[in-house]
Image 1: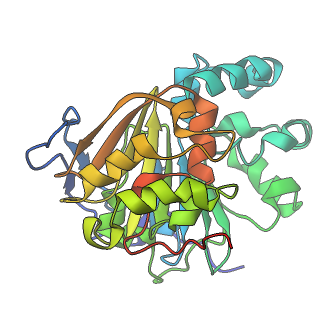
Image 2 (image 1 turned 180 degrees about the vertical axis):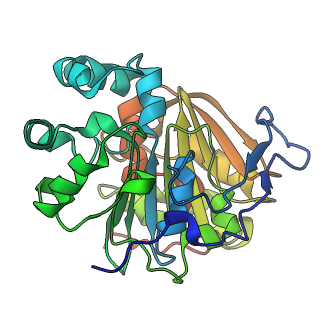
Amino acid sequence: MRARRPVWAIVLTALAGLLVACGGTPEPVPIPPRPTEAVTLAPLPAAQAPTDPRQALALVPADAETVTITNWLAIRQAAGHDGLTSEDLMVDRRDFWDKAASTSVLLTDGLLVEENSLFMLDYDFTQEDVDFEVRFRGPSGNGYILGFRSTLDMARVERAVQDRAGRLRGAEVWPDQFLAVKNVAEQGEPTWAADSDLIDLTSAQAESTYLHRGCLAFTEALGVDATYDDAEPILNGYDFEHQLRPLTAFSVSFSGDVATGRLGRDREDLAVRTELIDVWPRTSPVHLDDAFTGMPLFDPGSGRIGLTINNMRAAATLTLTHQLPFAICRGTPVVEEPE
């Protein structure tokens, strides 16, 4: 095992002092301006826990293709369970998960939750002691960063890792930062935090966030059950080669009943991308109309699309299965006609 290092010893020059704010004149239907966020993710002292889940992006390898950030502390607050002990939540867990699923979009059910009983009985901690969770996938492998509450005795987590217990098998514990990590970037390797464009796709207010490098194939966004008849009206009505600009990354973040798609600043193609939400065909049991309600709002200057959530589970399903028409690739889709 390599020597432990202060988690935030990487100097995040691209992030220090970065201001994330709305820009440009909204057209034609604006999203209400969001408050200016000062993202100051400079290195923290070695013995200090991170205060913002997005700080974990300093540990995500640069080649990761997807990242989910789940702010469990914010979700517990939304469900009215903030301040309860892990023992309280173990007893009242069904009530918590029912409330969480009805008040927040859950992109994960929590890394440790299926083995809560094991961790509680043998090590005296559970998923409910996790304040935030970051998971990532990419060619270098899959990994995670768990941020535990700063009052937890991390010796309990260290014992679980030493015993190779459950989902913590193969993890490392950084007790001074209250973190358990797996497959994170080595010191000096490039990370997601070095790319300010990716950081601009995040929000401190989000309860959960899905980040994706690159765009989505047209057929992927249509869904696995789509047919040529489903695609034909879209193919005849749009010229994606000329109407869309390249898309290098996007995110969808959720807070309460609001979903925000972020595609990067100064998106001249945002009107067309937003329009696709309204005309997208129903090709699977879960459709955009099931997840969202009302008129989508958009702001080309900040590159944001705002949606009101109608069904939390449906919103999570569409996000995780990439049925997101506003994030499709530029170019002419290739869809084979039936013989």
